[in-house]
Length: 327
Image: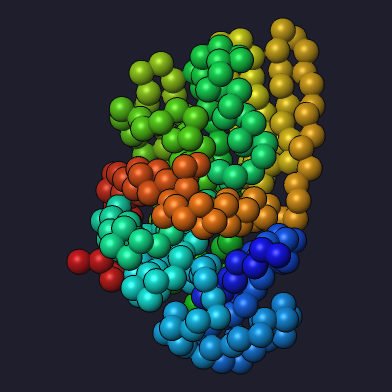
């Protein structure tokens, strides 16, 4: 009987709970350990998900022989140091997006992966969503002609949240761009590649946190209009317009459970129900790569993460989005 891949969670917060609920649906995976700087939080998480090994420091978790691969779900600015420390202990890594604060940080992480011959992947779960995989295949195959226009946004209202929360804390890399703007940028990159030119502008909270950012990615024969914001809700319908038809990913497109195809005056709905919340599919990909002894995924490679952070860096530079810990 094949042994299950043993997972550990670094940072037992809200996202980690969603991830853990999906991990329970994966047959060849087991949640074996959880680590936190707050032992009580780790114990509560362990009780909720029946995790046998609890650690009150990240270092102890990294040193434990009870886990094979770690899911890092801490705030953005801790990703690099924690991932590299864990990889130096020969742990495989799935790290929440963005993989690092900058392309330079991701480069350091990739080097650590190669140096220690361990797996590293950014937890960009939408890449593994069956609907998004299907839509990408349709675009790549030219089923609707040439992709000419893409519109994608991601926004929610957060102005009523306490200013001490993570989302407003500049020391934790607060911004709509890194938190949710990464999704529209990802979709443009996935379907159209690297743009030849980027236009971008941002508005800011009085404390310096970037509140909303609008972007135009300019390609040789296409435009992508992208937006992220914390000041209001948005439709969150992704529009993919081609010369011979249009694809629509329904609201909250980053977790799509189907798509609409409009062609020759007719519109047809194609449901593609999800297993679990949607994290299930990236877990399957990690387990597949680990069994194949790969240190990166072919679907979302090290280079893909480097490219994505390069795009984020460019937008940040154009808009003046900075954090106090950056020199």
